Amino acid sequence: MLWSLIKILFFVALVAALTVGANLLMETGPGVRLAVGTLEFNLGPLQAVIAALVGLAVIWGVFKLAGLLVAFLHFLNGDETAVSRYFSRNRERKGYQALSEALLALSSGEGRQAMAKAAKAEKYLRKPEVTALVTAQASEMVGDRKRAEAAYKTLLKSDKTRFVGIRGILGQKLDEGDTDTALALAQKAFALRPRNEGVQDTLLKLQAEKHDWKGARKTLGAKLKHGGMPRDVHRRRDAVLAVSQAKEVLAEGNSIQAREAAIEAARLSPDLVPAAAMAARAYIQQDKARYAARVIKKAWESQPHPELATAFAEIEAGEGPRDRLKRFEQLLRLKPDHPESRMLRAELLIAAEDFPAARRAMGDLASEDPTTRTLAIMAAIERGEGADEAVVRGWLARAVTAPRGPQWVCDKCQAIAAEWGPTCGNCGAFDTLSWRRPTVPETTASPTGAEMLPLIVGAPTHAPGAAPEADVVDMPGAKAEDGDEAAPSQEPEAARA
Image (cartoon, rainbow, N blue to C red; front, side, top):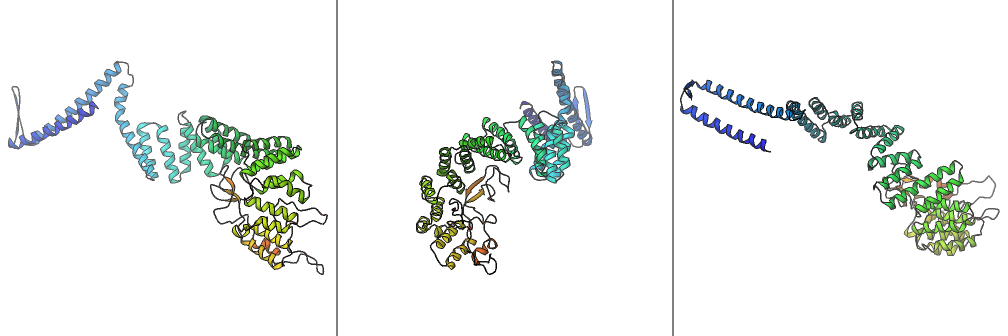
C-alpha cells in the first residue's frame, strides 16, 4: 500500500517537473543554462530533452537498485529466495496476467484463445497444476479430447490436483460410454474425497447400473455419514437397493438370503411397493400370513397398487370368490374411495358374479376417469349382466384409445417404464420411478388397436364349422372349465394388453 502511494506521488511529481521544465525551456529561448556550483552548462533544446530522458533513466535505475538492495538485505537476514523473487517478479506479473486472460477467454467460450493464453501463462509461471486445468477445459470446448486427457493426466502428478485430474478423466469416460473405467475412476475419486457429493452420486449411479448393490449401499451409507443426504431419504434409497439386491439373489437361487433382504427393504421403507410385495411373498413362504398381510396393508395405506393386491391374494391362494371378497375387506376399507380400491372391489365382485354390486362399486369412475382398466371392467360387467354384444364392443373400443392410468413414471425425464426398477431405463437416474399418471403423451406400455382388434371385431379363432367362441377372452369373472376362478386381484386381460 505504501509502495503504491510512493509510486503515485512520484508520477505526479514527475508530471509537474516536466510541465515546469517545458515552461522554462520556452522562456529561456534557444537554450538551457544549468549552473551547479562553479560549473555551468549551456544546452540546446534537443540536448535538454535528451538530458531529461537520461535523468529519468537514472532515476528508474536508482529505484531498481534500491529494490535489489532491499531484497539483498532480506537475503542476508535469512530469506534465501528473496533475490530470486526479485528477478522473477516481472515474470510472475506477466504470467498471472496471461492466466487471467485465459480464464476470461474460457468463460467467454473462446477455447482456442484460452489455450494460447494458458500456454503463455505456463511459460512464465511454470506451474502446470494451475494452467493444466484451463488447458484441459479449453481443449474440451474445442473438441480436442486427446489434448484434454493429456492435460488431466498432468494434474495426476501432484497430490494437490490428483482429484481434479481423476474427475476430468472420469467425465471423459462417461461421455465415451466406458462405464467400466468410469467406475474404477469414480472409486478412486471417492477414496480421495469421500465428502464430494458429485463423486458420491456418480459412483452410486454407476454401481446401480452394474448391479453392485452391496457397494452401492456402502456408498449410500457414506453419503449419510458425511451429511450429504437426509436420514429419511437414505432409508428410502437403502430400501430400493435392498429390494434390488433381493431380486438378484432370488434369481441366483438363494431364496433364504433373498427373503431376508426383501424383509429388510420393507422395514426400511414400508411405502415402497416392490419391497412390500416381495417381503409379503417371503413371509408367505415362511407360512407367516399375518406378517404378510401386515406388510401389504401398511404399504396400501401409503400407495394402493395392483401388485399389492396380487400379493394379498396369494396369502390364501385356494379360497373361493366369496371368501376372498370377505378377506379383502380389511384391505379395501383402508382406502375405500381410492380408484384402485374401487376397481379392485369391482373385480372381486365380478369374480363372485355379483355384477350389479360391481357396477355400484365402480360408480361414475369410468366416466370421470376413463382408463383402459376402468373401461375393460365396465365391459366385463356388461357381459356378465347379459348386455348386447355391441355394448361390450363399444366399451372395448373406447379402451383402445383410453390412457392406461397410473404407471411407473420417471420423475426426471418423464419416461414410462413397463416395470419398477432402481434406475430409469431411459435417463439412468436413481430412485426416480413413481406410480402416477404420465405428464407426457403415452408412447409405450399402452394397448394398441392391433392388439385389441380381435376382441372388438370378433375375429374368428375357431375351426370352420365349430361354434364361435366369445369375443372377449379372460375377462374378470370368467371361469375355467375345471371351475377355478380367475385371480380377482389381477387386471382384466384387455387392460394388460
